[in-house]
Image 1 (cartoon, rainbow, N blue to C red):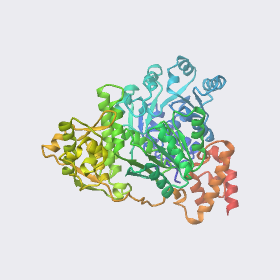
Image 2: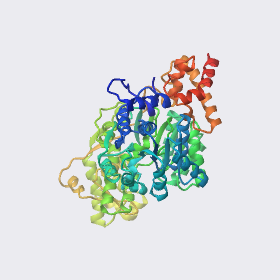
Image 3: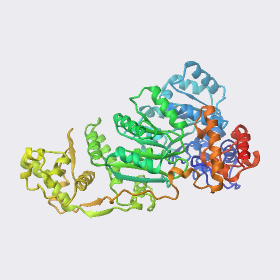
Image 4: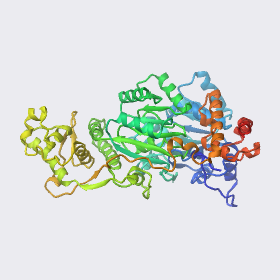
Length: 625
């Protein structure tokens, strides 16, 4: 059987070396989740935590992190306490577990007092298997006293990278979670995240007092995601063309840097026939919650959002993630793009990137809070992101290298599909840097990239005339390149630290390294963009891939099963994937089980779902034959 990516598995041998605890975990996996075997490191992690060991687990989004604490919580005596920053999603997480027959609850500020007291009573009485709570709740003495009254099976610290103080998703309340080890030293802890460099891993270990924890680091590669970065030119129109041509009718997330951009982009898409809603902190709580709920429950909805949206979203069929602005770090980019294709099907991580992105991010760093060391750290994050954008090699290998993992050219990113050329940009760099130098030294002036490019191209516009810049020796020496090519030169010089941005107006200035190019003979290789953006080349069109691995004769049955699932999910008020994942429906459509026993052997059909939905599924199969 082929389970979806969240619970996909490699074979688990029933050898004599597997003990009773592992056997119990295996039974839970089959009975509750409907799968015969664990995936990759899952078995080893589960055995370690079931045995009482602490663990730090790094797995990509969709790699099955949740099983690593859910199964041990169901095997060990007591209740698994899950620390999560995702208050708005706890209800959906609990609904998904309840559909599997798992006794789950949550405690957070969204509940009425009576609701909280009911969940607390269930915990004390041992009537829960898993209890979700936000990190700030664990800092309350009343919560600590509550946990002392019951039996805690384990502590799972989800999104553990939030403890990194200068990371991309810092949550101050995570700094207090070292109290778990201090107050409950005998309870195993498992910290989980999808994004962490070696430095961030060390920080997680140190701040959470996990010095004795075993580290489990899975491959960060998401081979089903195609990474593409294109030059920015009318980004709203580029986004519309991208969605229409490749992902019409698909669910997707579009990230923008500002709330204003979010609102404008969502309105633009809606005006052009794409069902889209905004999501950012400036919206009232009701609107945000409604838009998030629609995204989880409706097919084909696009959410345009700031980075506040998406962490913990357990929607398996997001077919694309688009960025209209440059992310601040590779960690953030990886975390956000990882929300695509959790079901393992072909998906796209698409971004447009231009000179203004570099200028804007440099200005944000200069004006950021924190000391010089903090700004240097932000600069290193940005430099790594720019290197990913400007690389002439495989983007996937560049991404994996950032997290310290090897990789071979993937053949499924834009730089593999349409390799860019590199060219000797030394002379062009010298011309541009000379223009900046002459303006500073001869005129005591500084200007932005657009004006300097106009000088190099010899444009006799009013601004050039006003300042007399047509009299400079560098005026008109750059006609060998077009405007867009010069902007690419500026962008790459900024990315390489050979040029800097200064002040609120984004004027260009020289750096210490500039003199190496101007006077010391340093060569400057540059990337030349392909004449046209890479066209998607994939085994199956992403927008139609949910049935791509089915025989044509089985597709109608698959669609009937999806219709049944949609109606069932709507009736129950839950997302469709809570009923069954697409991968499960594909297997049912292909195998066409004729009995409950046969249906129970399909991946993703555990005992509770078999009892709840089995007869209905068989009726759909019988009617479709």
